[in-house]
Image 1 (spheres, one colour):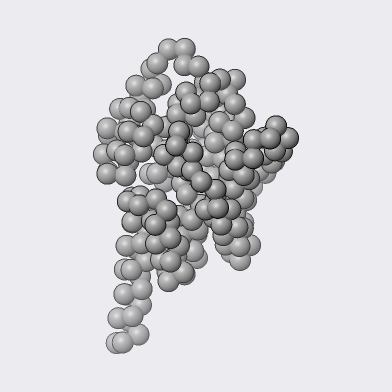
Image 2 (cartoon, helix red, strand yellow):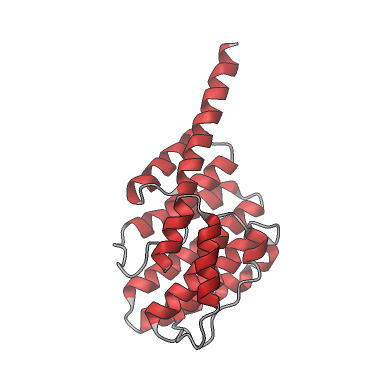
Length: 220
């Protein structure tokens, strides 16, 4: 079902994705303490919001009860991203601190894969917080670190991949900062890692549009 939601969202079938999410929410007694179930049930509604840039709605995300720490981290991350990108960057400190604690917990338990993933999530929330605060250089540097770290780790087959790849987010950030050429390179790298992602395709198209518009303007 999680892969199906992912596929629907990439092909623009948002209503179909929403129907699957609703089906999951209606399931009684989901064992969110079991990783596969907990991950998918948590990731699906988050995908539905973040793939569609619903930052205000992401602020209302609540971590599932009795879930593994790396599942809880996804919900905390999504809320933190929502806060940072909806004008509430002053409220992200709690999310960043919570992700740091989960990273250390996973590291101590020997779960290096998810410790790395949670560290990436923490950096992403911090980077978007910097961006909202007008600290563009710090934001770009931190998000690039997150993207490089995420790219160095092989994806687990149980998941379709990160909710929003860090490299794609770096493209979003650079585009928001007005660096269309740099953003275009990051989107292309993101698409090489995750072919066909709708948000990266849209971002890449927007970069091309801005670059072409700038070229025309300089020729006039």
